[in-house]
Length: 375
Image (cartoon, rainbow, N blue to C red; front, side, top):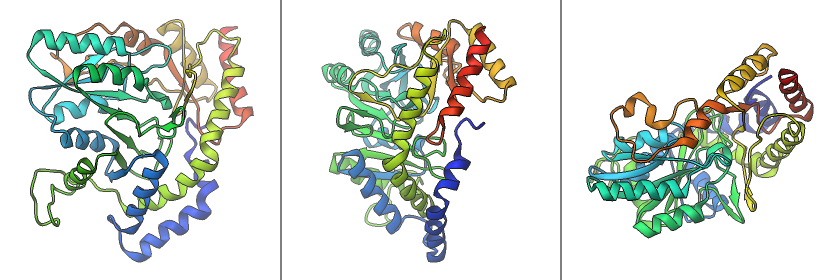
């Protein structure tokens, strides 16, 4: 059993992926070019924004957006305490200070109440200037951008949507990547829409921001790549990855997004009578199910269940076992607000196998193994 079955996905799409990659190989146009431009235009249409700018990976995308907004030394950027390291890593990378706030235990996403408490604490201290908020679409579910945006607007902060796991998710008719003042996603292979290497993208409706991002991606270029007008980085999407993503995006739109939601419902039904807390999807929200993550009563129960499933050949993952403020890289950083929900989640979450090619029989096998552990 595969945790996320990329091999099965490739076999399903091989007939279209192989010719698309071969076309790039034959053209010898490996960096940028028509395929990358066409993909950017298609991604912008899908998400529902004016501009998509691709780059080397999702972490670069976050850093580049902060750079485009002028975030730097003396600024505070507010980041969920329960997320992947990259969401906070990019803040000191641009010279700013990350301030971690708590999440909601039911959705795993940003708590607007904790966010406001963190902003107020920074203002009272007076050492840093609140500048931006990072909100993460964890496990595929968009964060509550109405609540987050209200807090950010109150204090004049920009909102950066980290949609690395949320691509394809929706709130009403609006898709992940269209929320906040700007958004970023990742095309890491295991993401809802993944390539066969690394890749990322940034989304914005602002013309000037898009122009600046395109400069920053290519060494801060001006009129051409040998006219360097600012300090940027080297972060570009390969044409081969664009070719792969173009094929995968078609499958994602037509079949895969619906398929993972169907698999999530199978899990919900199969686990309904068991002592696990299944993921919550608020009304009018739609998840792209990067992960299907349950909560257990305690860390002892979680770890015991994980070991029992492993013994039966069922892979699981813990996303994430350590809060951001406890990472060694952030040692010494002030914790402005308590994050009890994050602490609880780190010790109780467990992600089960999840992907668009999961069949009901496999879901039932996982659920039966979970049931057997509790007997």
